[in-house]
Structure formats: C-alpha cells, structure tokens
Image (cartoon, rainbow, N blue to C red; front, side, top):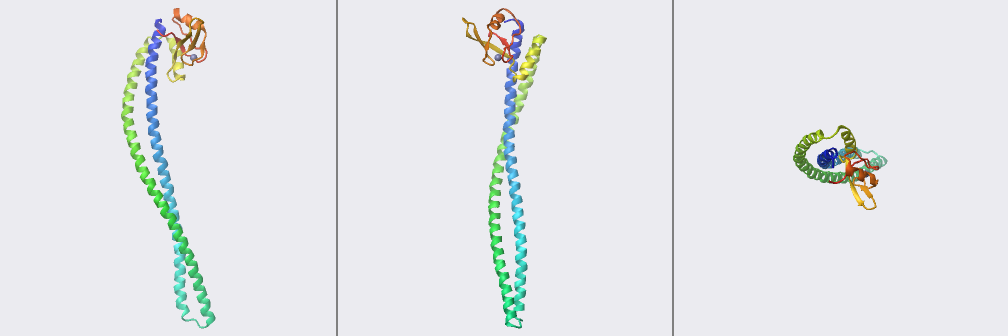
Length: 241
Ligand SMILES: [Zn+2]
C-alpha cells in the first residue's frame, strides 16, 4: 500500500474510534431522555388526576349546597306545619316536605356516587405518585452514571480529535476532500476494503456495501497509490495490507 492510501487508512482508524465514541454518547443521551420522558408522562398523568379530583370536589360542593337549602326549607315547613289552618293546607305542606325529602335523598345518592369516584381518583393518584418516585430515582441514577460516562467519553473524544489532527497532516488535500465527504455521509466510514470473492475468475466485492466490484479496481490498487471508489457506495477502496 502506498503512502497516500496508508495515511488515509490511519485516519480511518481514528475516525472509526470517533464514530464509536459518538454512538456511545448518543446512546447515553437517549437513555437519559427516555427516563426523563417517563417521569414527564407520569407527572402529566398526576396533574390530570388532580384536575379531575378538583372538578368532582366542586361538583359535590354544588350539590351539597342544593341539598342544604332544601334541608332548611324542610325545617321551615315543619314549623309552618304546626300552624296549618286547614287539613288541605296541612296536607299540601306535608306533600311539599316529602317532595323535598325525596329530592334530598336523590342528591345524597348522587354525592355518594361522586365521592366513590373521588376515592378511586385519589387511589389512582397515590399509585401514580409512587411510580413518579420510582421513575425519578431511576432518572437520577441514569443521569448520574451517564454524566460520569459522558465525561469519560468527552475526554476520549478530545484525545481522538487531537489524534485526528495529526493523522490529517499526512493526508493529501484532494484525498482528504473525498474522505471527509464520505465520512460525513456514512457515520465516519469513508473507506472500504476490497473483498476477494474469487481471485481466479476476478470476482471482488466492496467491504462497505457488499456489492460486486470491477476487477480493475483490484489490479490497479496492487500497483498504484490512488483514490478508487466503489461504484455503488462511493467508499474509497483499499487492499488489506
Ligand atoms: Zn461499496
């Protein structure tokens, strides 16, 4: 292998390490993001339950008010009842009282039903609160261990970037342009080894995309130090030294 491709290959090794570090950083970010989303979802659920609780509570308050005013009315009618002048008047008051009593018994049932609903909302809210605690602890743990790992990875990344600078110094400018374009498009992977499928019949394939390659690439690279690219994926080809 000539010095031009040799320098590119050294750069590729650094680039591979960089891509690996980048992937690990991304996976750390994703883990923290997923744990955070879980806590956010549960918190939203808790808020909705609280709103439901408040709504039901105010509904009960409204009905309770109605019930109390009827109760007052019943008390008032009871005192009026004793001063009724005729039987007709007496029975009319009694009927009115009974209507109020029946109404109130219905309202009491309604309140009871709503209160049962409130209890189940409360129980659900307690469950969610416990879940939030668990998930928050998980998030803290993930974030903490991830922060340590991220610090390590960032140090590694800085070191690799220095090594990359050194490796780039040996690479010819035109070759560098092709390399960078490919590396950017293929997550750091700019070069591909030529795989010998069958040397006798001249069958070769690209180690990057596994498509077959024209045999001339192989024969040319045996003697020349030049940029040759896969016809399918565009990777810079090389023969394994
Ligand atoms: Zn290819």
